[in-house]
Amino acid sequence: MSHILIQNIRILAGVDPSGCRPMAKGEAMCQLPVIENAYLWVEGPVVKAFGPQSECPDIPDARKVDAVGRLVLPAWCDSHTHLVFAATRESEFVGRIQGLSYEEIAQRGGGILNSARRLNEMPEEALFEVSWERLQEVRRKGTGAIEIKSGYGLNLEAELKMLRVIRRLKEKSGMLIKSTFLGAHALPLEFRSRRSDYIRQLIEAWIPAVAHEQLADYLDVFCEKGFFTPEETGRILDAGARWGLKGKIHVNQFHSIGGVQTAIRHSALSVDHLEVMTKEDITDLASSTVIPTLLPSAPFFLNDPYPPARQLIDAGMGVALATDFNPGSSPSGSMPLVLTLACTQMGMTPEEAIQAATLNGAYAMEVQDLAGSIAPGQFANLIITQPASALAYLPYAFGTDWIDTVLLNGDPVAPGAFRLF
Ligand code: NIG
Ligand code: FE
Image (cartoon, helix red, strand yellow):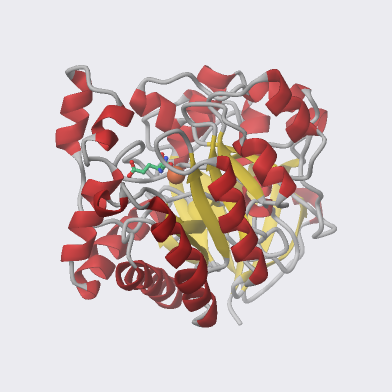
């Protein structure tokens, strides 16, 4: 077993000696546990021990790394992405600059349906290759665990193709990857006059097929005006529950139409987006166990209002942050950018944003026992920064490459200038 001893770390953040840190909620969101001037011992793929540098053990056969002046934190847990897609959509981006809205583009058969056409045309192998490249890119940006959705197939064969690609990404990378079936992402044009047929086949044939092949961990629905109603969403979530698939659903991106309440009634794991929230949505969510997941790069890119993160946290909730990496509303899988947007646009503190992007993200995809903290026995999924004096430097220094080295399962995937890796 290989040993790495990282010494003289200026700040070691997200530490958890117990290995069972509860989700950070409300006021506790800003209480990020840190050790200043610390050591960290990695044994094979996992964290073995850590503590103050003054207590650093002597491990003769360890590779020693001097991290003086640097910060070390858990790799990101990005709990909401659509990383498997065939083609980018920059022509719609230009359309939006010229005044079309995201919803108008979707109404005209662009948007998700445009991505579905391109994905249906692409052979599975080519889809795997482009997705693999994207996964490498987000790993270099510090992502250590990731959820990936289907939803650009919109017929059984193409949805299964996407889910098989996600499974291969997981097998080949050895990464913590959770897979979500999003057959109810948009209604294909040919079903516009018979939407109940689409939903019936989704419920009666597709969900059972996906579950039977164990291709998904979760189920998602785009609950939104012009997409799927709360009533349809409820029926789809019911069907998922019969097959053991919990909901992680898109709600309140453009309108508040009851998606939050539907998610609560069906014990969803998370509700994602939340750009448009009524007082009632916030109160209902606060008294539930559903995790609010905020995706600030989508409103940044679509020029929409941001989710009311401050109100959610001040009402006692723990929020998670994720990228929503997709070709329409967030063509970026950068968690460092999300961190900055969380602070500058949603009023989160750097500590809150880091907890939301690591620990709470891990909870939002149920990998909190394996990742999201620096804890004995958890994967050594770590970000080592360039020299920096405080954690606040990370969201502050947006657009600069402040990540030096990324270790996943104890291996450097992004060996930076940090010469020892
Ligand atoms: O989370 N809102 C629904 N799904 C994605 C966008 C998908 C797309 O435009 O391709 C989202 O924003
Ligand atoms: Fe999304």
